[in-house]
Image (cartoon, rainbow, N blue to C red):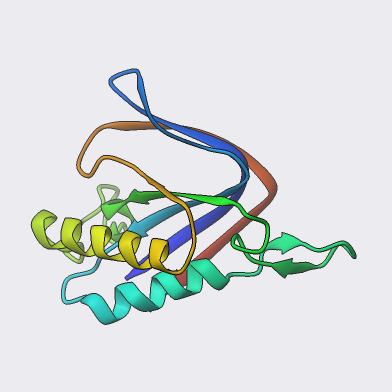
Length: 145
C-alpha cells in the first residue's frame, strides 16, 4: 500500500464537470492498494496521514499535522500508483489490487481516518475524475508500507 500526500491551500474534485468534493487547507492524498494488502496496512496509512507533520508552526517549522491545523483531507483512490514502467513505455498495473478489493480497503482507510478525527472528503472510485488543487510549498510526501 502506498500514498502520495500533497499539502494544499484548497482542492476541488469533479466528475462529469460536477463538483463532488471540495476542501480548504489540508492534504490531497492519492491512495494505492497493492495485491495482498489488507486492513492492517490501511490502518497504518490512515494513522500516518493523520499524524504527518507537514504544516508549519509559528516558528516556520513543519511540526503540525492536518489535525493540528484543523485541515481536511481529499482522499482519492489511485491504482496508477502501482504502474510499473520499467519495461517499455506503457505501464503495467499487475501489482495493483482488483477493483472490488481495492475499493473496500479505500473505504476502510477513509473510515479509519475519520475515526482519528480528520475530516475526509472522497473521490469516486473508478470514475474519471478531475482535480484542481493549489499546492502549498509545494510539499509532497510519498509513503509505502
